[in-house]
Image 1 (spheres, rainbow, N blue to C red):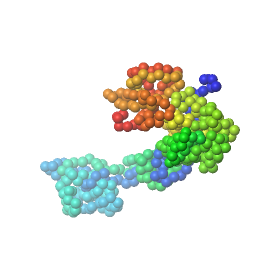
Image 2 (image 1 turned 90 degrees about the vertical axis):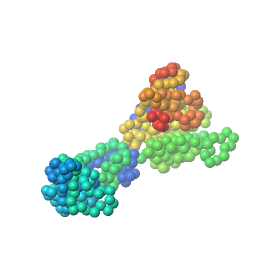
Image 3 (image 1 turned 30 degrees about the vertical axis):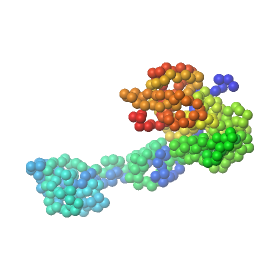
Image 4 (image 1 turned 90 degrees about the horizontal axis):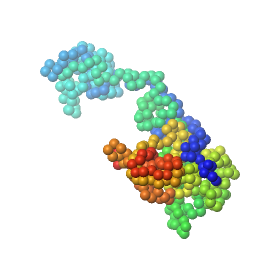
Length: 420
């Protein structure tokens, strides 16, 4: 196969994303909506706050009664009530009167402001805090001081959240304040995880001659979880078409929205995944001008999108980040599908082979600039280098040499404290 038959990374990613559809909306309990994408607008059914209330512990008053109040010339008001949060005050504040009030308590009729307790002579440090007959106020306030007005935050019939919004804790709190117990969100993707290869054994089994543990399934399942999707581990298929079909049928039976496999997509005699896809589905591409991760397959198996990753652990993990992660995020309704790159200063010379390359690196911040140190070991089998890295430095296609001090883009895969 000639070089012209290999897709660039950008063309391959476009092919994947063009083929991926957003999942249908589903209703869910409010807390289960965390990190999900809102599918329907949230409209306020009432004002927020729903009533005028105090923002401080203090006394509800008429501002005109304390116009000239100072520490040396306090205003003296008669205390006629004690209003706590959750009560409905049945009194009115008239000239010369006040009501003690707690934070969040409704404002009584006639009052237009609150004087904080610290600006009075009440012994507010006393836990018993008996209601005084009168109060001395040591400063003036303007009408509206320390009062939260109805609708000040949100007014009834306002659309407060739009479809496409990612629900963080603050959005959930806002929705809860408006009385919604359920929300409509984009469905959570179910992603089938398949490993292939006669040499693979379960992680708990002792290793025999020529065997390695199936770490890829756990790495990719964790990457799926990090996308707030549901991994469905399909186990290991040996290097036969029947075994691969058996595992893929399990994925279909479990109703997955995307199948991800590792290994079996290259050109070796035992790489059978491509053959199964050609017979039972279709292949849109199967090689990408990328390092690591050249043997990469995308297509459909019985109508389900299928992404075949390389078998080497670093290649599989990097390929997942560049292709599977954006696909899962699109399925889940996200608009921001790729990590935002960071411009870094390269501290090492880099030799590349002209493919778009993603090199493991450590990015730190020094004097307001970000600097990247490239790991010496860039072998696609060396998973330990990804453990030590917090970034992938991108070397563009057709670039074979990068000098020390050059600027490149880094894709941050982690943000340890050393960066800041």
